[in-house]
Length: 136
Image (cartoon, rainbow, N blue to C red; front, side, top):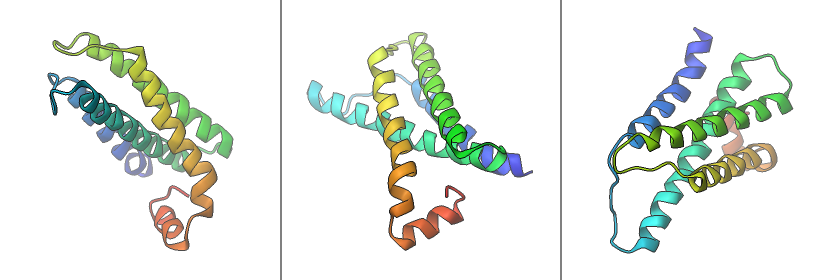
């Protein structure tokens, strides 16, 4: 039951990413720069959040050193970003791009650094919240 509790949010988020990647391209603006900025920002956010969920799942279900949990969470999240881009190659109106994987890796790395360097030094209320969510 413990495994299920920690892994369910991760798999739900991965499913949501897969579902959204299966949808036809959406336009929020006719301006390329705005379109690019909006959707690439979403890439950063969705994969940063996936990294946090992956880290939480591994941290609470594996008996591994902290560095190994961080490394494995990073690797698994990057691997999912790659498979997501491969998946998009087969979706009409979508295309898989290495550039998008690089943007995803940026979001993953930002989340990793945040959990490693900044969250432990965050204000008490934020650390308390992170401990309740079993991220710290």
